[in-house]
Length: 492
Image (cartoon, rainbow, N blue to C red):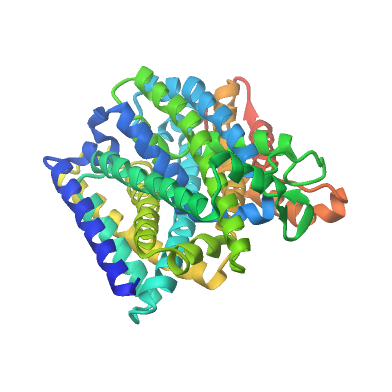
């Protein structure tokens, strides 16, 4: 199928999003933008958050990684479920009890102003890096398979996508995103199912026969492993099942429960009980959805092997869908990919705008600013983050990592660790902090983890640190905070 035709479908899809935004964004104000006036339907939020949690990385990178890591990512997903349950019954009661607009306001009330600003700053750093890495992956695919053929430069592709996102989030914010994410999650999951059915039919396999074929197919670089292997029992490996499950639980606890983007949607739900239903529903649905993506990954590798196609990693799915499948599947793939892109990018820009306005600029604290002035500041901040996204995508283009899912988990290990330590210290202790030293502790913890990660071969021999690096980071932060705390002193 021609690049022009695919591009037309992308534009048509965007026009649908713009129409939804126009309807849902009517009569919006700052509270609509930040938390949807706390009037969002929990079922819509739950379904839409699946798309945000999965993103284009899951759609492309998880199936592509099956050829290297088999089904080991399912171990992390089992940990995700534990993390969602912890969020539902530990963190959400705190957020709703305090009636928070930004979850980092909890840190101010419990640990002081410096802890509050530090926590919000680490969220802004982490979400900016993570969201732009996700955005880069999808832009790279669109560029290579469509826009290069139309002689559109990479930076222009990125700019146009960001302008699209701005157009439908500029007014409504969370109020609009709850609805657009629902639409986009549907598109992504439909793409997953249709592509899986097509490959099964071409391979002349049933669902069970497909799984059996994966269990019999050895990995190209590791004959002792097979495509459908789930659990790793090698204690020294990064993929050891206990490391992956425990690490996955903490990844979800931080990347969802301590993340303003994810919680911004969740606290827009009417009450705590519905918000908890939302989290539990997401936990089980994510387990099913990622299992399906891994299954699709196995099918893609079987299909590539049968047809002597050499594409691997992040390149596998787009290469097969756009070059080796019928035109209608190319359209479905592109629309599903766009559906996976927008929920992660639009929510991130909106949440970063909210956090910067509320937590850094103190938008709601300054009573001298009128509603109109606050709106103008919020819109300028929104535009500024779009520009930052453009710059960061160009940086990721320069770096160009082959497996985006590995890159994202590594970013999370370094940037969410201090947030984990701060919230754990606030919830698990009653001690007060020396506020002037909090930023130093939170800055040093990731640096120490970077050194530990770099020299782990010299320090631990064959043992390799995996997802537990996030936990180590949080633990170092916690210990550092304990050392600068006191049991009875007033907050400084």
